[in-house]
Amino acid sequence: MIQAKGKWMPRFIWAAIIQGMFAVLWTLFVVNPWYQWFGTVDPTKILALGSAGSWFSLGYILYIMIGVIGIAVTGLFYFYIEDIQGKAYSGISNILAWLHFVLMNVGVAASTWALMYAGYEGGSYLATYGTTNGTAILYAHVHILSPWINPIGYLVGIAALGAIFGGLGYVIRSRTK
Image (cartoon, one colour):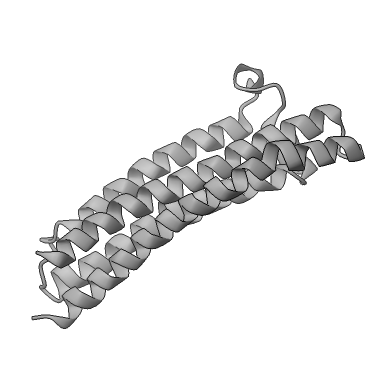
């Protein structure tokens, strides 16, 4: 069995475990029969209705795919460089790894949670006032979802910037001796 000597792979794996625990909490919220403790509309109804609820679905799926699985797989890249190639992160590559770790974790969690929140709020509104009511649909999209577009985009940009810093750190670390 290979004993990990690098410092970055365990950090990313622990981050994935923590993100996974939050994903479990989101899953419990989705399948919770006591939804009225947290909101006025059953989350499964919001998912089934689509429309604004699609934002919730997308945020939930992306959080599991990127926030949990993607973060864990990222740890394997660090394992390869630090433990297989035997190249320890230091100096600028270590700074880039920190930026990768912080920005990617924060950006992914914040952007997907914002998607889920906006989708839940918009979906709740439409579930209450009707998904075939043109006025309700317009209101949900203009007044509930639209204000979230730019903040979510900025948060995605933060996550992407973290990934870019990480990729740059990979290149720097893997090319130096």
